Image 1 (cartoon, rainbow, N blue to C red):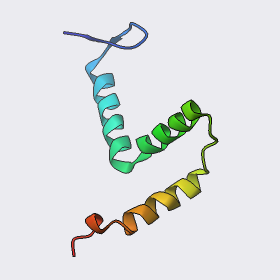
Image 2: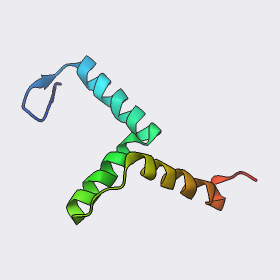
Image 3: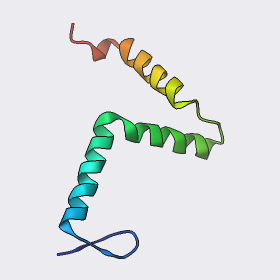
Length: 71
C-alpha cells in the first residue's frame, strides 16, 4: 500500500518516516505554533510581532500560568 504526496508522487517509507519525525519534532518544540501564529496574522490582516517578542510573550504566559507548575 503506497501513500501519495500532495503532488501525486508515491512516497517511499523513508520519506514518510522523515516527514512524520519532522512533524513530531516541530510539534514538540513549538515551532509549528509560530507558523500557525504567522498564518493567523495573515488571515486577520495584522502584522505579526517579531519572533523574539512572540517567544518572550509565550514564556511569560507559561511562567504566570499556575497550572504549569507542579508545586
